[in-house]
Length: 352
Ligand code: CP3
Image (cartoon, rainbow, N blue to C red; front, side, top):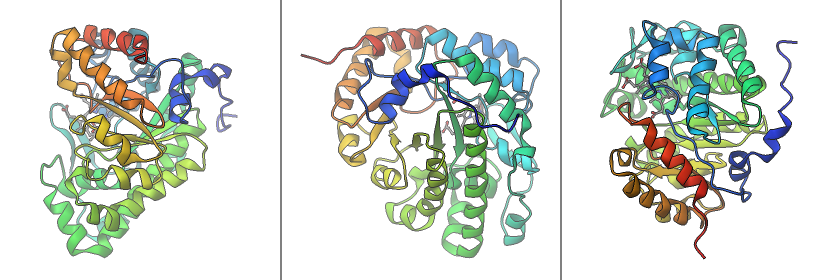
């Protein structure tokens, strides 16, 4: 019974988020925020007191509570599962931690074929708390969809190869350019882990998935197409077999929006550097997601909402538009601004 695929809540049929993701026209522009769970909310900081990030991700009740917090507070159109892109690697036994203010740190960076082969494939038995948290969440969320997610092969490879956060991704790209056999094995391994991780979340009840390739913007289009896209495409194809909409997001990707869509996305996430009116033709017959500069929450509310209006109006030229920030919520964000922004997006009607 616990492994049974969940029956979707009947209210999900009317979800504006899912309608937009399918390219239909919902009654209002749906909105959610990357990194809405965690970071700035006082109720988040309270429940996380004294508990490490990865420890939190492995506690189904805590994951459920943290995922629900922004839905309760902001009335956003979707929940994003509280976890991290490196959690599945931790779960299969890779020695890593998430250091506050730093990010993921890997004890023994992956450099050789033997290092790659030592990473086990992910099975549901590695992550029982994930299936449990998703099941609890979909029961609580009712008509609000839950977005599951995974890290894309390039972005996760960067943490594994560098051993931690990196600006240049130099060792990662050195492997890509100089040791294609090791690179191919590593990308296949991570793609397999990501596909399995998404499957576990969708089978437990997640209604959509987002593949985060946050650092793909470090690549030229030719290198992306040759050495990264086929692996991301495998993850997206596996998610497509599950019948849920797939969002594909990266930062600094104005030159990659076309290929990121072609990799098999229904929705292409756009960061704030690319004006929405330029992004729309680049993604072609796909839905766009984004893309308010996350620092605009520090401007006066009416300055922030005027920019949001421009984005929504530009988004109407696309097959569909899901409003979001152009990257994650900045930890010092005033939650009141995101409440105001959510209300504004819901109320903003097409110009006549
Ligand atoms: O609300 C949500 O978006 C859900 C939760 C979520 C987290 N990480 C929680 C988290 C999601 C979707 C992620 C994805 C993730 N993790 C990405 C892709 C998205 C992106 O932002 O580009 C990346 C690159 C990571 C890796 C990672 N984990 C980084 C760079 C950091 C930041 C380090 C820091 O503190 O500045 C983390 C840590 C992390 N992931 C925190 C949270 C809430 C902070 C944890 C803490 O401070 O204890």
